[in-house]
Image (cartoon, rainbow, N blue to C red):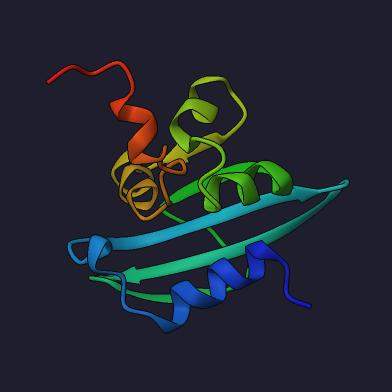
Length: 121
């Protein structure tokens, strides 16, 4: 059984990422999983992403706990808010970090009928 993190990174490596079409650089993710750090390394070349698990220098590094990262990639947590709270440690090129956040899913949408409550026409 593949965990959500592995599935996410494998998908990045097999599908072109149009939202990263203008991006060139490398990002390393250091994900703490119960005291063990797992690395995911992205080499981005204009929407094409090569994924590996090497622990190598990168243009940007993101550090967090794997459960929080999984909530972010599933749209259940906001990566920017987590960064502002100090739950995502980031260093390096901020343009790469912002570009990566663009490919994360947003929060689940509230049903349209819920948003229309209280509106008058």
